[in-house]
Length: 596
Image (cartoon, rainbow, N blue to C red; front, side, top):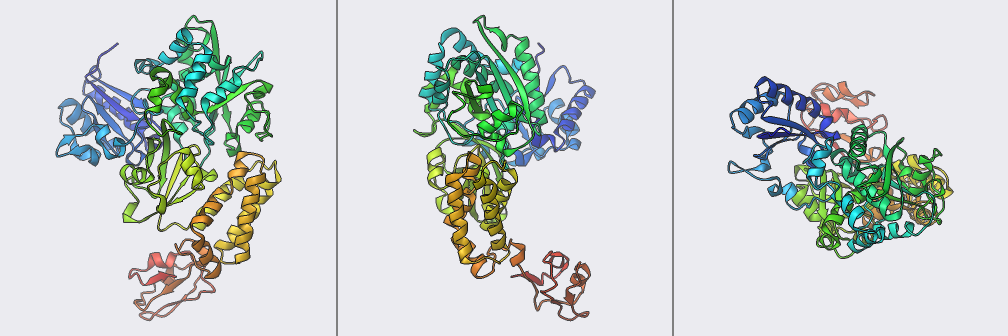
């Protein structure tokens, strides 16, 4: 194996790839060959580094130079100056990584300093398409340990002792789930990895699969050994082509090295894994709907019990864990349950990965110890809201979660605390909102998504969420009454208590949480016919102030000719004709048009 003096790590995750990181990598390779450095410098495509706001990202070792917002036309200079002459190109570095001309390590940068990477430990570090790099980072050591030193009962006990809870939604204890499936006798058992990540703004599972696919494969094999299963399925969205490709490569490499397939580590244990592609139905994130989809049926949930651990895929005992949950398993086996419990909180040990998005400066992927406060995530890691805007709320748990307001900014993040506040952990989406967001509109957005994604099997979800959306539409249009607000709240509670599956039961959460914390905004829409945030279009009115110079630019841009007035005279907007498109405000050079 060749030894290189320098390694150029180029982010190959979906986000950076969409910003031409693949072309950046290719240009690095071409320029390095041109400069005769190909025997000394290796270019590696990695998974996500996490700081998506600064992508595409390139990190060069051994110096650890963190180049951000890379462009193709910057590559040649970096090769010529940094890789050839040994002079770091400081103006291309991520600003936070430089302190008085001295490079910081990634762990010293604010975005990373409060993170602890367990599930993401290899993302942005290794080439996910090279099994040897995973093995060099203790890959498959955990599988070897359980197959040669531990009984299935031992493995399940370690998982119970670790306190690992499912990172995909409800936070059920992983060890208990495995323990329920293990005693059940059957000619076949199954392990399923749920990679059907459907929450708007969530990309945690995708990033793990793209950056560290072998961790998931190894964990599935460990789970199979623990419960007596010999077959596994990864149910992944077809919209994740990079993740699917890397999973296919990883499965092929693991089979070739005897780490999947027959008689793994000469232990007599067999385990095979297949990929199943989902078509993007949000409801298939629910375990029984997912099972139906793998079986070739329409993805619709069923009543429980029986639970999948007793009667799951093809009627056989099955355990289902999501990607992030599984990514923790090998590290728990290697380091022990006490190690995992040494960070996080008592009832929620370990870490949690969040996709940080919305009105936040540092959008990206973060992994924090449970018990970290919202303030630390939003301000210390996320860098606060752009343009100095005030933080207003954060939506956790996607369409199934709820809003947490600025009053609870010092709340410690764990499963139970978020539930107490009317939200939930969910898979890990964290959408930040500032003072310019309308909370009624936010609730309407998430409910609209749920209505679209409902499978239609049960009446509360199929019909009830539509009626809720209709009321929210009336509110945002200024046509609702206080009676409608009461009706909306009662309907939400009834759906929460009577829907068949988790999708329907949690669909009202965004509405209930915003009504709980932002009741005054709902009432302003209803009583004053006013949107305090100036978002709801039907409740806005454009007015021309006395500052108007009569330049006529606004009238020329108006698509419905609703602005009257002669040259150098004050213009007037006909409110009956105005469609509230905002074209006049954009055209006015004197800022003389306001919204009320």
